Image 1: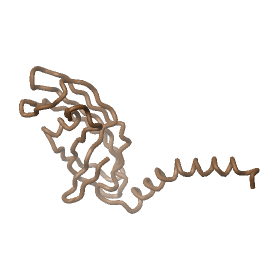
Image 2 (image 1 turned 90 degrees about the horizontal axis):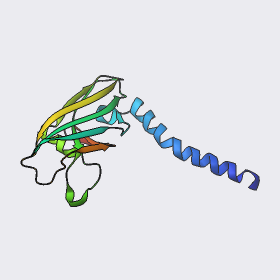
Image 3 (image 1 turned 30 degrees about the horizontal axis):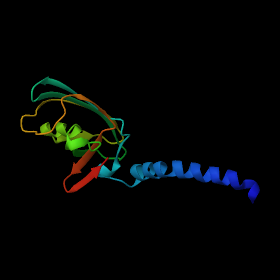
Length: 148
């Protein structure tokens, strides 16, 4: 038994690393419907550029994949990826022009590129510019919500 201890431990670690992602993919491609069948690799990016005082250009890019056999429509909202000091808003500033209605056809991947000119005159604490990676989003379909 001691002879195979290291091999067994290595196999268990590999299974625990791969199995959750595999099970999620299998669930999304077979049983899931609606927004539960949407996958997102969390590789989104948002760029913000200051145009003038209280005016900001915002552009966000992300890729979503509908793994179900039916088209899925939902609203998309942005969530701030991390808690900055003094609760300064960044990605969630895109919600000033949203929520965004998105439809993804069955078994399709969709690249989403959103560009907005954001009026920040009513936002007390916000960024003046910058780039954010690993964007977090919320999908809304009626009463059902899903955070990715």
